[in-house]
Length: 401
Image (cartoon, rainbow, N blue to C red; front, side, top):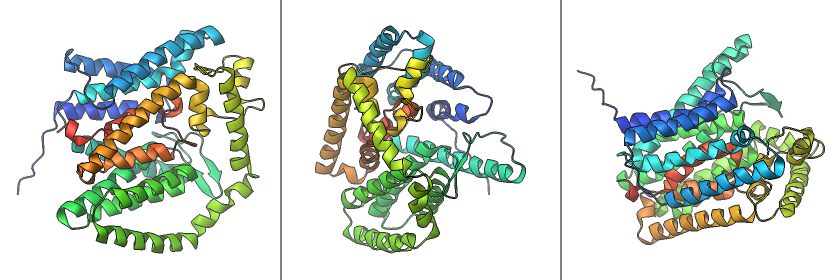
């Protein structure tokens, strides 16, 4: 029996390359600086433009939004240099990742289906998790970090918080759950491989990522998919019954007990500290409500205090949409609301013509973005390299196939 190897198209190779670089994978390598990974991201955009040879059109639901948003990012960059006396390189270090959004426009111009993009994304995430466990084994045995940096791993209530590939794993769980629902609707059978991989990813996320807000967002997004993303009543009832049973077992587990101990161990700082952060950054937004504070790099004591607070332990990426307001102001909020409106219209339209049941990834990813708004906002500059993939999966497959 001859082994058949499918030829990988140029479009698939380009998406893989784009995914590798813009995902921040280069930043997980101990030898690669954050600035170099940003510069490499820009280089990838030019590679895409070369292959497309100037034949670029504004295709896709969110292409025009991206043009408007990036235009404002450029304006805000100059604004930041003026009010904070920053150098262009300082500002680029903060806002450079947003230009990865151009990748959305470029991918929309490639001949590749949404299913192929989803498959590449999930398989790439499998590699992240696999390489993490290999590196973790090496780390436990020898204490050496070879090819994946754990970002200074810390223990949290008995968990090792690694922080590797958190957004990829979260989104892959939702994608696979949506595909699980679609497979059952189409073929009336359960996809065991999907169930196994969802289990592996979930265990990895709970034991090594340990982000409670993200775990809740994943759960709520999948719950919405159960109620709205499928029209099979039997499947809904079955999943809900299994969910209740699984929830009861989780509540009795030692893992749940550890999660409940986090705030006690951290002296309540995880909740009370975050409330103080919300108040601090909202006050900062009110000082410059129209354009926000702009892109801030802590190059002096004044900017360090403005960015991290008086005691130096406040972080913009922990306060969700309030941090976005702090940076982008009301103009940025208006742009975000236009984006949300587009997403809602897409979902409502898909529900009316029932296309949402065969492309429920759109719904799941949109809900994940909404449920992470209070704390882990995906438009935050710390996660902007990942945003392109969110928009790709929120675009209906009818616009690609």
